[in-house]
Amino acid sequence: MANPVVYGPRFSTYVRSVLLALEEKSVDYEVQEVNILQGEHQTPEHLARHPFAKVPAFSHDGFELYEGSAILQYVDAAFPGPSLQPGDPKARARMHQVIGIIDSYAYPAFVSQIVIPRVVVPMMGGETDEAAVKAALPLAEKCVNALEKVIGGNKFMAGSALSLADLHLVPVYDYLSQTPEGQSLLANTPGLRRWWDGVKDRESVTKTRPQLG
Image 1 (tube, rainbow, N blue to C red):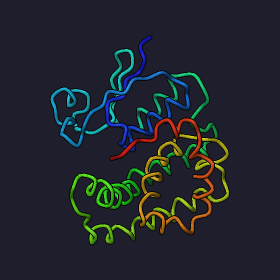
Image 2 (cartoon, rainbow, N blue to C red):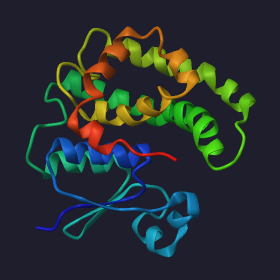
Image 3 (tube, rainbow, N blue to C red):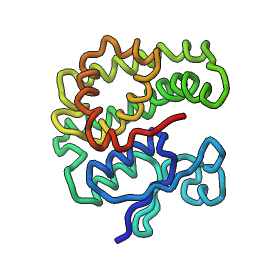
């Protein structure tokens, strides 16, 4: 059986979530880099894998798949190892709720509107749009507060066990926490900070941490 292949840059939060799942399941895999900063996601080769020119795309034994959440669920179901989806209906619903919060609200606020202008644009020689970053702060704060409420006193986002919700959150939290805005937003979130202290040194997290710059 061939190893699964993940198509996309390791610095992508959605690519990293898939890699985190594969690492947690102890699956051997390959990464085929797609340099989205140079437009490789718009090439005919990549569009054949993902018609919407996004990452990641995924391949396993002739089965082609795109959309991060679908890939994560496939990885959990297709490979042996610890389950990454709760069996309890309430915990599983909470997992999907967290994934929905990240996809619909937190990723745009944290990554698109804070991390990219604050970190990526200067890294590429540009200047941060301070007004745009400031405008993102109310939604980012709402997202942080929502996630803080969800975790409450739990060890993980969906309860007592690691789930896809945590693997979805790790990459965006990691990036946000490295910005001054993120440090301020997260200063008064004891639940999230406790969660991060518990996951940041997991082998899957350290092995998939991207090198920027």
